[in-house]
Image 1 (tube, helix red, strand yellow):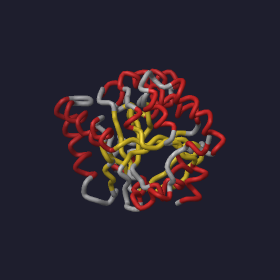
Image 2 (tube, one colour; image 1 turned 45 degrees about the horizontal axis):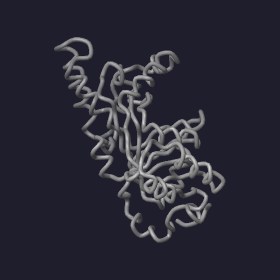
Image 3 (tube, helix red, strand yellow; image 1 turned 135 degrees about the vertical axis):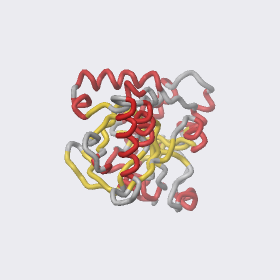
Amino acid sequence: MPAMTGQCIRSRKAVHMGPRASHVFHFTRNLTNLMGILEHGFYPHGCLEDLSWLGGPGYNAYTFLMVCFCDIPLSRLTEHVEFYGNYGIGLSRRWALDKGLNPVLYFSPQAPLCAPLLSAMREGRRLQGNMSEIENDIFTAISYAKPLQGIKLVEGKPRRKDFLSENEWRFVARDFHMSLGQTDDMYRDPNQRRELNESGKQYVLSFSPSDIRYLFVKDDNDIPALFDFILTNMPQTDTAALKTLATRITSIEHLKQDV
């Protein structure tokens, strides 16, 4: 079975030695999650974002309904999976652009960019009342923003992270009332979080086997199960396309040896 899995990573290294890959990757923590993505597509989920870097009261943490990706080169993926999981999928950049994904804008808290955002939100609220259309538009922009550095929870433990090195892309659902401006208290309420995540199903990001360039599993032991899943559980499509997709499986175990 391993002989059928993917092209040699070494033959593709030169393509990915730049600061950005020509694909976008999404990683998750187990094989079941990856299989769910392959079968159903990406469902946006509520993500609690620390906005304290904006420097203004009342905007410390908000929940956005989104899916996160990155375009870091293969040579740096092994560091990335330590934070986000060893199971992943890589899709073409053309797919990403067609689906409305956008790279994250990284902010330095000391740069003269945060103050105007805060000022515009406050003025919009003053003119039009609570959560005005102006403020809504600004929050949409902020949902694609992140500080250069910050704290990332990894298995419940805080770790400092250089966010700039993640080369993050995002898809953020545009329905404001369900996806933007939700406070951290609302996110921590399991019922409200469940409702929010259920609403993400209406924004599913679909793809075809031809959009997929890479499939990653933790080690070779996962390969047969994913191989069989692709041939038996993927949505109805051309059998030849599914067989081609199955050859794109690569284990992180081998990737660590080859890059």
